[in-house]
Image 1 (cartoon, rainbow, N blue to C red):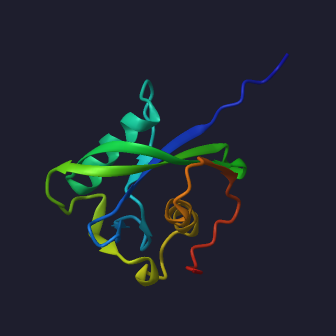
Image 2 (cartoon, rainbow, N blue to C red; image 1 turned 45 degrees about the horizontal axis):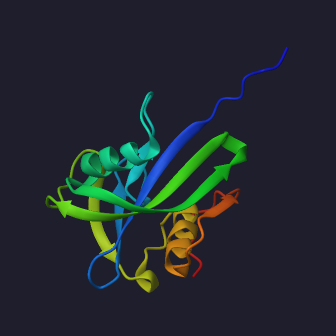
Length: 145
């Protein structure tokens, strides 16, 4: 008898402004910055999730432009999709999920940014036409650029 493997799935948005700064959210539950996004709900596609999560966390309406990467976190049976997204309407609004929402130049990203999110931003900035597919195993939050 085989055991059915279960995974959690997440989806995160990389949103840049006209100055090529990255949008990050300072979480309410932890003092950590991360890309807007979160967990995929039952019956939801990852690209639908990222649209919903960005709206919930930031107040912004987006469209997905491109898949940047698929990340496996084997220690948690977690798969994460990273998308380049574009704002189509809305204004940034602080809410119960994020106590601060701000754009950062890559060399100004706060020290308390989740390292896995930094890796995903770097993959976006590498700006190649290949979708990144990799394992992310390090849970450290220290910024190393």
